[in-house]
Image (cartoon, rainbow, N blue to C red; front, side, top):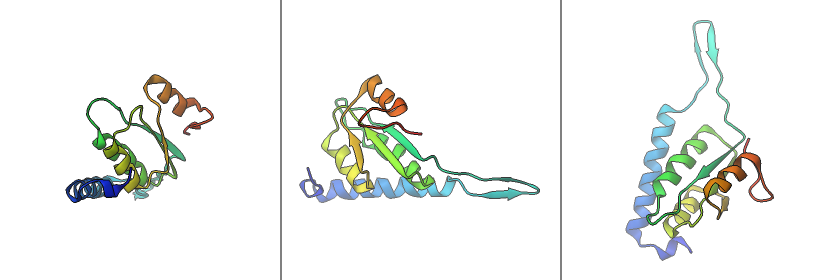
Length: 124
């Protein structure tokens, strides 16, 4: 499956949704702040796991609203799992630069992200 197989309208909508979610994350995202004599240092997690349900309707928004905030926060390893990813979800993952996507779902997928398996490894 490639982005070329989608019509331009779909690609534009995916790009617009991603840009919008990314802008919201940057506007509310973490920053090092100092107030009076107290301060706050925010550091991103090393890795996160994102679960995208794979039911009858593709939930591209779930992918966007879990991956983009992690990217904005500076997370270096983002793992996505979905039991039956729709082509739209895969296209959005590709547009976002997701490099680790596993076709597994349910409680076992969440457990794999939490505790680790051979593939995917655990998120810390």
